[in-house]
Image 1 (cartoon, protein in one colour):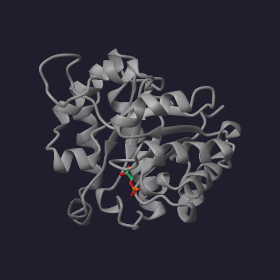
Image 2: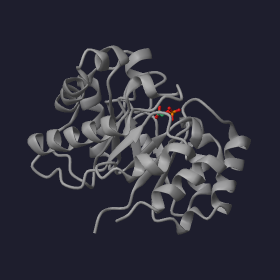
Image 3: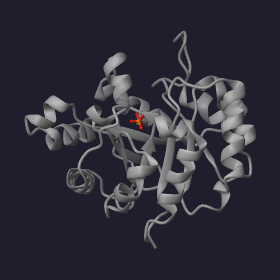
Image 4: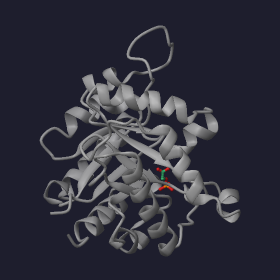
Length: 252
Ligand code: PGA
């Protein structure tokens, strides 16, 4: 049987203690526990401990937005994978385009973070995707393949890795990629994973970039799309619940 669709909500640098508590309580009331989807909330680091307590026994899983490549040490301001695991995280986003663009993260750094995350029992959600210029120049597939080759450690498998394809130009812009383009890239990612990793079968490949209730059903119905990484719409319980509902209805 196919693994359940994954819906991950990346809150980015949003929400405070009170607003995040309200959001979680609305999600709980919305019946998330009965959903067929694997639901992950990914708050900023300040909220992780508090959210971990609030989602206990609800079926909602917890992720972080980044980690440092080292496990401990003199890295002021940084947070290690081990620290994230110790407060109840199951997942960590790595290589989000905002980290690559604003904080200069390289593929080599992302690979080192990935190794550290897996060592600590976290499942990395590794983001790949092209810029608009790269897409217009016909370089989208090559860009994504290079990112996968350079970011992924050899020991990944369906239990310790999720890939998120996020075209940079679609993030937070309200523009989504065409369904054909999403399917083409997801199929390409699946083949690239097969070529690189001996045990890549079943690694979920999520789509991200302006996923909303209005477009979620069509995107999630694509055969090679295993779920969605949702930014803006994950901050609104009604929208996030509608996306989770669309995922639950994806045929098995
Ligand atoms: P968006 O963000 O849904 O707001 O486009 C997606 C993401 O950056 O993960």
